[in-house]
Image (cartoon, rainbow, N blue to C red; front, side, top):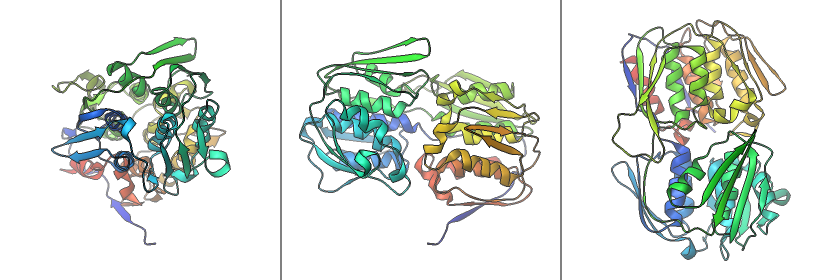
Length: 441
């Protein structure tokens, strides 16, 4: 198969102010699509992310009888309600989306009479599903797939599940959300305990919709309790900018020797903005301001301003902070490569089960760029000290966040660099390269 290659030329920076229109939040768009599909009637999702992952979620529900139309930067949803879902005639293709696969694995498990099979691309088919199927099988879930439901393809037969208390050993929002979504149709209280720090969008959205969903934290343990059953109402959703997308241009703006970068209407959720805390340790040239947008988003938003401030300082990222910035590790590693002092990123094991082994691929990118770094266990040590990257060719292996991290690194290279499989950025940030070009105008 012919490889697609994109050449990225070094930044010709004139110090201008750049307003970056970053991609809208993928996590919130997924959930808005799911909740709108569960509800009976019409709902509207404003400013959604229309990347490949979210389109996969729409395609899955479309096969169940939900109607979607895209008009003027919004999705119009018309659903018969989950009780009237039809069994799909074909397998439900989750594409490359782990969120789609894992959340639907929980959601569909508690819908009696529904039978479907989830499939995915080669990368998704290697990612672990047992962390969702095992706790739900323990309360009556019925799954059939490779190695007792450890990976896709996964056939689900909806059942009446039992209320229970679940204990998860990692701070993972996808597993927590899958169990809570199953709990929507369970008679009684579903309780999930896990290490604190994972994303809480599912809980926030459920509470906003009227569900009895309570969160408590004791020490380092977070416990979420959902009282079911709960019927999702139809409604409207406004989606803010994705911090994971904003991080790429925040880092570019920070490494620039001069100029200002502005990112508006960014999601301001403490379980998602750990990258801002880390960048704040690396430089004092970042500013968060109350959002000037008049839209009422599903969660609070801020405007972010970044002043070029190269060189920046190295940083230590504690393992407890990683769940709040796990998707931003590759681009934070790029920032650390240009820091004047060393950096140490701790406890990155979760990166090994993403779209690729992101820990190894991040190390590969830094090494290609000429940065001295090493992996010890699940820790990444970055010496820093780069003023320019070496010229490189980098294979993203279909991982959107690695392709974007590579492109940002290439803007500070000694000459043009090549990114293999650059179009995979469409998964989360379809207009990434257009926004990158703004820094040249």
